[in-house]
Image: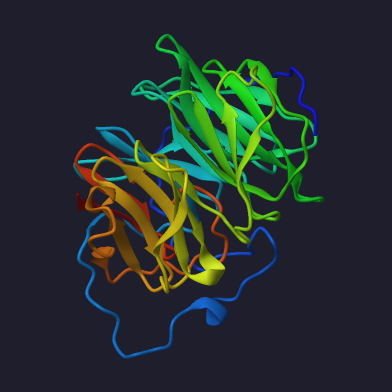
Length: 349
């Protein structure tokens, strides 16, 4: 779908701190149709293992996304359409904004000052100052909704919000670029088949086209030509992350986590038989992902395949029916993630 300039009205929302909503329903339908928990959950081998992560928040309904700064964690509860905040150091959660809908797919904390989130159902991008003020509906995307967001920089002084969009009726989507005030800059008019997730490193934007099984690369300014295919034959590719060593993506249906090595441009698996891996994230401490049987896993690229992935944390519920949205956030000291039974967890790296 082509994107054009647009705008919206500003609205204010309550800063009250209601008690968290107790989870009273299933995780919901996936992007490609409903997936029952029975179909994807591991067999019952007895009592659940003991949770070995710190609980920052609990009791929320249908969490779909999480982001973190060095001081606060922000997370989206799709059921009531609310965005909540809790201190990274711990404390009582509070409601940050109440203008999400039942389809809010993603949130990104752009800086220590501003949070930006997208809403698929309302087809909007919204920003809000973290210190208070009102939510600003700054952009309305005609006919399509945002499904993934990431922050990068065209230059040191020019931040760019990159948005992956998708038409829920056709599963086709494209890439759009915005300034941090959410003014539309440019975008592609290509119809990618079920675009799923994106990640940014330097001036490069990487994203997955799940329907076609492709990994794509685009320039941050989008002026150097159309996105280029980098990897093909990756059927069902979903979450994606990138660091200085490589690009990483999950293929939940095949239990694979794979990488494109920057050094030699080769593609290889870094983990297999992972139990529907999803939500991959990466920084200089390692590559992290979640598995459907409730494990946070890590692979260290510095080991150069000398060591297999290890389990950082376990004992939580991770069987999301809909895997869209950002499930893991990384800070300098912690891995933060959300669970399918409404918890926000923290574990030291």
